[in-house]
Amino acid sequence: MASRVWAGVLAVSLVAIVLGLRPAPEPPPVAPTLQPIFPGVEPGAVASFVVRRGSSAVRRERGAGWDAPTRERLQLLLGARLERGRALRRAEPARYGLAAAVLQARVVVDEGNAGTVELEVGDAAPDGLSHYVAVRPGPRVAKLPSYQVENLVALAEDPVPPPSP
Image (tube, rainbow, N blue to C red; front, side, top):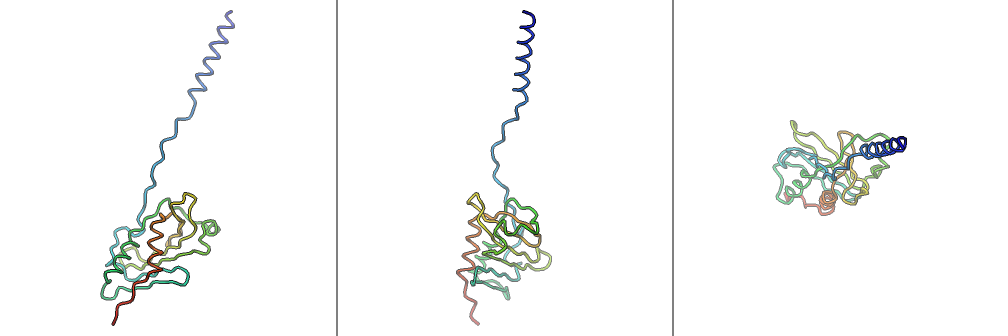
């Protein structure tokens, strides 16, 4: 009888140990923090920019200043934010659709600011809400929300006519 009691105590103890060692429940998912590509840069600090998509391209230089439509589009570009950035290894561009990027943007900012930043947009990410993008200087790969990619596409496809002389 005593051995049955001990066997019962041992069984209950083992169950308690097993139940007590369960991993804690996973915390709810946290929305990714979006990091600005051009922190604190205003359109007036941009010396020039180029956005290319296939054979379409928009190239603008500040000169005396930006006209209103260009300033609006440039503000959209400067507002782009990235999520989940990490170093891009030499062999990885094809993995993210960056070997033949579908869209490129190059922004040259006045000295004392960010310098030159280049973006190459690759494939859509599996989440369906973003695209992979290579950011230089870096190199690093991150995810750019799809609505930001749409802003860049609109800039490349609907160029603002150059100001008349």
